[in-house]
Amino acid sequence: MRKLGLIAGGGDLPITLATHCRQVGRPLFVIRLAGFAAPELAAFEGVGAGLAELGKGINALRRAGCAAVCFAGKVDRPDLGRLKPDLRGLKALPGAIAAARRGDDGLLSFLLREFESEGFVIEGAHQVMATLTIPAGPLGRHAPMERQGGDILRALEAARAIGRLDAGQAAVACEGLILALEAQEGTDAMLERVASLPRALRGARGDPRGVLAKACKPGQELRVDLPTIGPRTVHLAAAAGLCGLVGEVGRLLILERLETVRLADELGLFLFGVPPAP
Image (cartoon, rainbow, N blue to C red; front, side, top):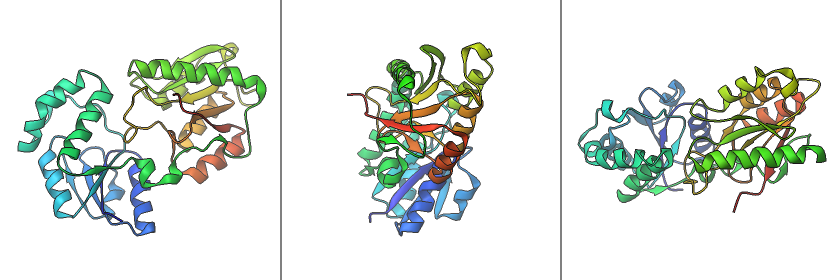
């Protein structure tokens, strides 16, 4: 297996991928992004680097013998004017600024091209660890009932609509009403907003109604920034009174998979994979 360079932001995904590589014996080197990467990643071979220290990261990956690179984890959109680039980062900065004007997808695609131009193969998290994504149909003990089909379609339609604006990847629908759309605050904060809505608009534990859908943005670079759920998502969806969560087959990452499914089973929520949009 070719050695993987993991460029790690925040959250559990980089830890999950690094642990998987160790378990399957895949050689790994981690670039820990300063201010984002979890302390646990210090247990793996690697170095720390700032967001704009492109040269430091690329040189470290080359010295480590990495042939492929995977970007994983949360990184807040940077203030490009406050970055402290090295010489390679300074060379890329004008292109990054121009790409950022086209939205998050434009900036991410630019960054991937920079690494490809240096000879690295880009692997998505779902390519590094195939079991990360949601399969078709129900995952766990519960499945949506026929009367919930309308909310599934409505929530997916809304999630894909805001994706076309490069605004977010998630939406909640309940009995035909769009209750919330995700923007820069993220899925967790969106679900907390739903939980604060009047009881007449949403479900509750014991009387669940409504669906969370997460979908890729049209034309999204699928090797980075796929929609993600985990145990906290399930907890918050239950607290918001929802019936379940849906995502596109092969395009929704499930962190802590066993715990996420166990928790959904326990709380009575369905996890359901639908065909991706054309």
